[in-house]
Length: 67
Image (cartoon, rainbow, N blue to C red; front, side, top):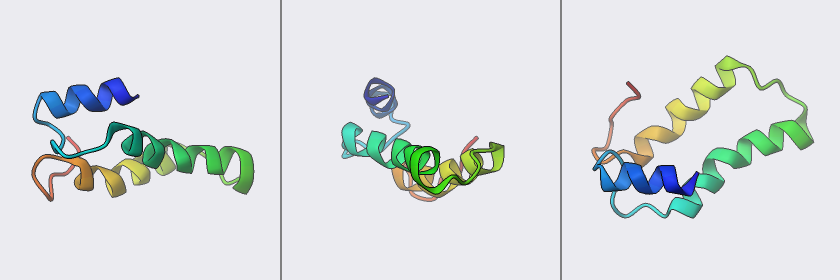
């Protein structure tokens, strides 16, 4: 996962100041929380909401939306 983030940074798709390990934690943490603790469903809607919520904070230009 960190390698994917690093690739996005090198391509200019993600902000240069991102910490790949922190990005990984922020993306995977909610998934593990749902799977092991809350029991809430991990359906397509959850994945889309997760990416839609976090991606604008990671992109090179603030306010970019997922393509």
